[in-house]
Amino acid sequence: MDIRNFEEVFKNATNLVQIGQAEWKINCDASFIDGKPLDIRLINVGDKWYFTDKKQTLRYMNDLYELNAKDVKSCITNVLKIYGFSIQSGSLMAEIPSASSIMDKFFDYIMCVGQLTNMYAFFDEPN
Image (cartoon, rainbow, N blue to C red; front, side, top):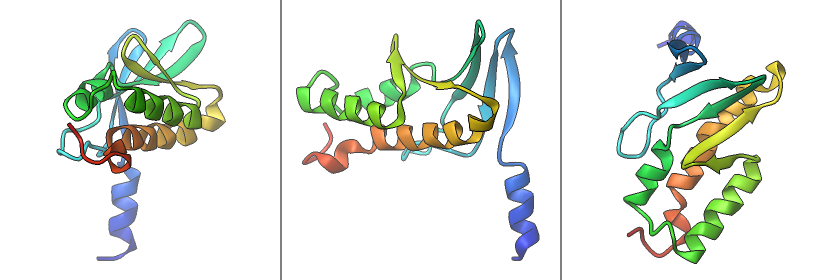
């Protein structure tokens, strides 16, 4: 193995596939702990751009946590506050404010999903 292996992998780490007039799927190798790939979408709403998961993160979390529990809600709220993201109608939403912030927001999005889905580390054990 040498640097060319890394260059090739990173060169093709993501790609966009248009699936609607204002929606693209971001193909990447990020996945949940169970191996299920993240379904990250890029959507355009008016003049704003967002990363979204089409409710995938909350559906995954619903199998691990009691989402209505006060401590779980508090943890979710705090993680969202750290990243400046929101949950709208069950979807994790991250606004992309500028072209220069695209990759930062993308990596933050993946980290946010990771923190949300692995927050059992802060509790005794997942449900």
